[in-house]
Amino acid sequence: MNPACPGRTRAAGDYDGWVAYITRTAGVLGALTLILLTGCASERRQDDDAPELRALTVAEEVSSVVRSEDRHDGYVVNWAGVLANPNPWHFGEHVVVTVVGLDARGKEVVRMEQPLDAVPPAGSLAFTGQALAVKKPAKVTIGYRPAEWRRAGRIVSAFKPFPVSGVRTGRPKDGGYLVTGYVGTPYRLPAGTLAVTALLRDSAGRLLGGGTTFVDDVRENRRRRFLLDIESVADPGKVAGAEVVARTWGSSSRPYEELALGGAVPVHTVKPTTSPFEEDRGRRALPGETATP
Image (cartoon, rainbow, N blue to C red; front, side, top):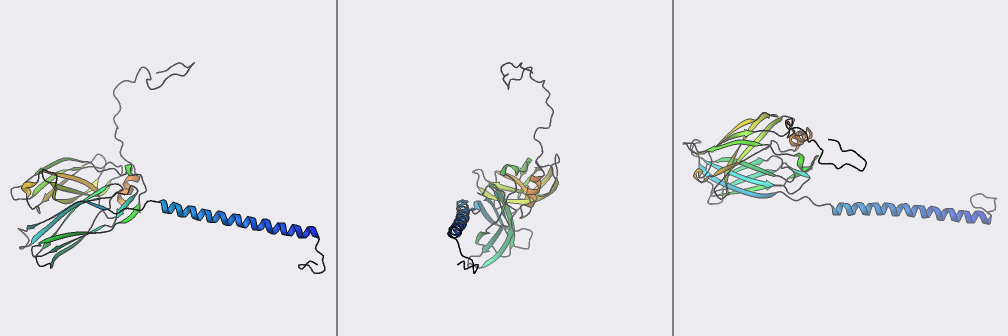
């Protein structure tokens, strides 16, 4: 008797077919389950194999304290440093520097939090800053808040450096250190605001301090002049030269990404003046083919 249909007798062939159907269904379900499990395991393996993002490293760092001559008997705390990004596919965003000055008793006399600009993939960021303290700090510490990572939309070579030219340095009679020059852009789109940083070094290449200024509306074939009058240098006489770099301004990678997306200015734009070769020396004629110029 067929339990599903009362009054109907199940034939032997029907029973065998029903068993075969159940067996095939179970086999298909088992195969699908195995495929899903294999895919999940493969996905987990890919995630496990993906390299972890490495933190920004402090390549250089220095601070100094000088007496302020025009700020009501205070002290100027100056700092400078270089952060390096070891990750080739990610921008380091929203980095914040915290500078704390302590007196001889360990009491805090100055604190400053400075947001930094975005650090490009496989690149570096030179930064400077200063703060005013009423009492002279005996010790200055510099701390960093970890970066937030954003995957770059272009390859590393698309993020070209901003060319700096005509750099001149000097020491005014009233003290400090003067740095002037020009900054351009390698991109087709105009750069709204660029930060220009000068790192001051001694004859051995050691970092002594620095300063930062800004230039606006930098366009193709149109350089912008910058001037830096760095007064908060502990000993200007030790300065042997200045390393000047320019970058996009802002803690987000968006300005740099937009410039790179717009494309770079062609390097060679002058029409050749020499005549072409009489014979193409870069190609060999095939058998039966007549070579052409």
